Image 1 (cartoon, rainbow, N blue to C red):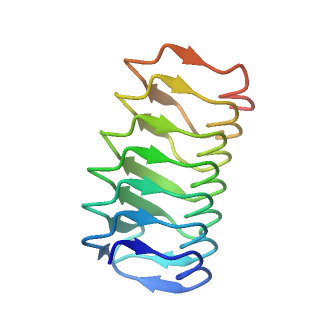
Image 2: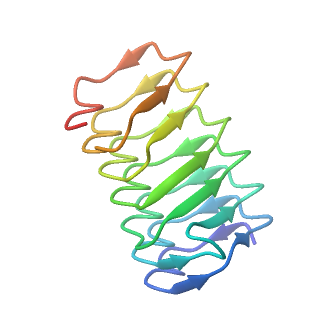
Length: 147
């Protein structure tokens, strides 16, 4: 499978931890409004080959989520907007788009290869306490608005 199509799992109930091998792109709204519960209090999704998280892919999911994206380079606009995201591991990300993590519940972020943080990228992410961007050269004025 090269991609998870738009809204394919939107609104679905998930139980357990998942690995999606051979997925290159998670498309528009693929997991939006999904109810996700794991074997513990946080479900874990792993996408070993994914390169792009598309618009609204995990928007407004309803339960705590940990995402592992070892090969991802791009997180598109509003991909995790309003998501109950506990942790994300995406060490190769170079591109974050506007509002990618707007109003999500993440507490710590680390994107060592991101050089530009766009407008509203982490706006209203009120639980955010630690951000690590060692190669950042530009932070848009509203990137962390409301934090």
